[in-house]
Length: 405
Length: 135
Image 1 (cartoon, rainbow over the protein chains, first blue to last red):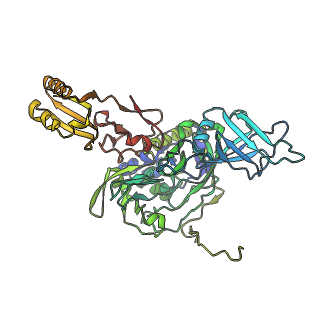
Image 2: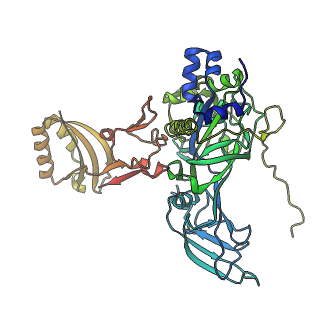
């Protein structure tokens, strides 16, 4: 087959002649028509995911009040939730996991975390007024020391969703081997293998359809929270060097991506505050990534199904918190989706934290955008570090601090 | 087959009596204990699902009331806000009554309200606060 280029695909998008299908449809097409034919027919495959992604947040430029205030090195809260003030005078950052100073956290266990940074971001996006309270030390050019006002998304200069780590390429299956219930970011885990929770959209997930990062890279234009965003860098804890299956998908959590986009374009349907019982607040993010079918190899990657993607089962009562790296076994996403899996001889019911239903909606939405010609593909400006780059995620080694007295 | 969920409050002097046995023996009612808090020397509370003939059920309730048991129909109900639910499935394995399950085709979480025992465990476990208890 003649290899296609992204420029050629964009020409077809502009002329309304592009053939774009979702990753789910691609699996069916390859099964029915074979790889060669599918690769020739299809120009773009849309992939997607939706789930809690704690490493997310929004930076805001509020505009300057009169007289001016230097929020940098001051303090600010939005609806009582703490924002980060280590930037310039009118810039603040609100992280998804941030809480109000007086939130009881886990003092009454398990804490409910009803309103955190993720909820502030959702309310901001919904057009609600937020209460900004700030204090500063005062300078000659920024004399104001206190500020209390309502702010609204439509009035502030910028609100940019900037997530250091999203799009995890596969994730652990969490279980609990201990004799009491535990509350984790993977949900409540009942004692003695009472349940198993996973968090990935498997065969629909962007980085599982491009396992070696051949098309998804820095600069890739994406669907982010209902608006247009970009992959800005590789994500924190990006770990491409893990063991992989013969189809190149990783056998454990691997690649990640940092993403960025204008919050003002987004829709609260695809960006939602999350309360994880006993764990904390977070933000659920919906992301869609188009994969250009440039050749047969890329078509093959996008034809991978849940049967052929496996991940690892980890005990969150001991192995995970202690960081032992111990794994109880591996399991395919197809088995996870069946609702029951076998672990250590026991039949265990399976729950989930990500939403395949929402991810499917996103893959269909992005498909429509491309069909209508309102979304063109971009060429990556640089690749994410791949499996042979030597790039790997490390733990933190604790070293003694001397001479502290 | 008539079926009803009821809440029984009984005073401490009745805790020793085999009331539930009577429901089954004298009124031919099938019972399923959904919740029970019964301590000696204290008042007891029990949530039951009863199944049987409607006339027998009504006679049974009269019998319980004669024995000074306070009988209320279970009016608590868990409801789901369809706008908030994202169909993730965090509730699926947490529900003791298996009221939530995935539809394999749509990948939506189906909420079978008839299985719900209104215990409320799912409410705090829903990351999107899509579930609430209504009275």
